Image (cartoon, rainbow over all chains, first blue to last red; front, side, top):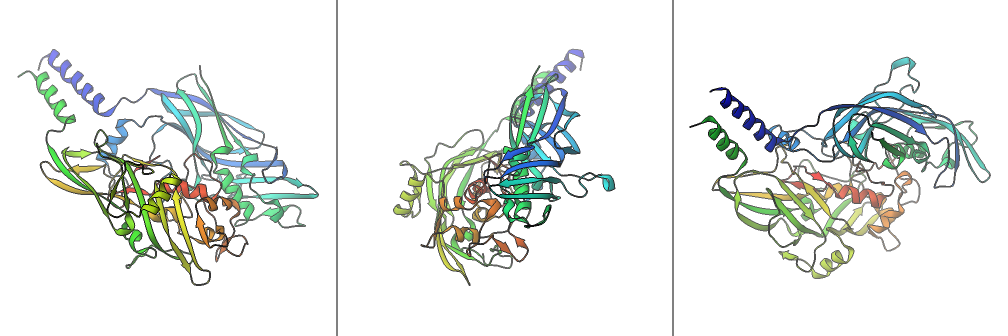
Length: 245
Length: 282
């Protein structure tokens, strides 16, 4: 085959791949800011909550691809995948770009030294994975994943509380899916993800915490612990904003 | 022959089907739709909180079916899966080879064709509720007695890019041959206590506790059960031998705070393909 033949061979081969597989985006890397917010709030159960301290462990941020590329379908055709029966959340979706931690976020502080890395493209939603590996004896959250300290007041009742939760180890049980975010992931963009603790605490029945204890503990298996878990996994507690070049 | 012509021909052959085959398509709610829970056999599907359940009707509205590139030109269908698997139709002249599969469950309309026997009164209630799936039956407990329920899943359910149980995509249509395939609706998903756990449990007490004095529970009554504060039949926080019962909704992106929303979100994952195969759900 002469040079022209090789050119046609390569061109048609690439064209065939393009037609059947799709074209992945170019590599991009954009800064990510993570923030834990909501020092004061009034919950839907009528409690006015003032937090003195809070911390949350965040394992990953995933920028979802707005369009599942045909490459993923081809992969599914060629490579059978095992999948858990119950979890149909987000791990079969295509990730456009990601940051992988974990990092402990502290109330009132922003983490600005993080980067989302992946490929350029259009996104329509974000996912966050909470929890993750601890850093051992010096870990500010110990073996937990979320800790809150504060006071809740409703009428004449004031409850000082302190405690937290540990999330399940399985990633699908720590996944927050469908956080609204639309736009183009491209160089020069920046992403900020804020977690609103007012939403996380919204369904806590502070009146059920141990009366008289100061502070009242949030025990594993309590209504407060369950409400914190459901609140932390609710996409409504997350606000993602995109600044584009 | 120039190599470019060979490559052009090979590229076209790689992407285009060359012959045809036939698919005979069924819809099923599996044995559970017929005999209820616990299912019979050595590895039964059962409620962990002591309830048993049987169905009077399991109506499903199949609006569209996609085999390959486009939707099949078929009218919407409605069937009662309590009566067993329903044969939807036989589609001939489909492109042979591997085809993508998807389908949509939606409320039946005037043009929906009944497959087998469908009780007109139940169909009317299904249409009135805007339901793609309607389950009616009763649940029994050795201590709490019997409750009836009618669950009208008032949302369309869209399953795309369905896989077979081994993870391979869609359906292989044999060249100049015929095959059978099944849209499989997993009813147990509606009673799961978790949409994220690998092995969720089936529970009913929170449903029964939402019923009024008539001991009949509907989907809308489940809205009175907040997931963060579920109550049992005794009106106290819902507990089992391990402590407080936790319901964790699937990670769908929606705000899910009540048992009603939890059940509707779980319903999205009830369509399967060829038994245990999963799909992408919307």
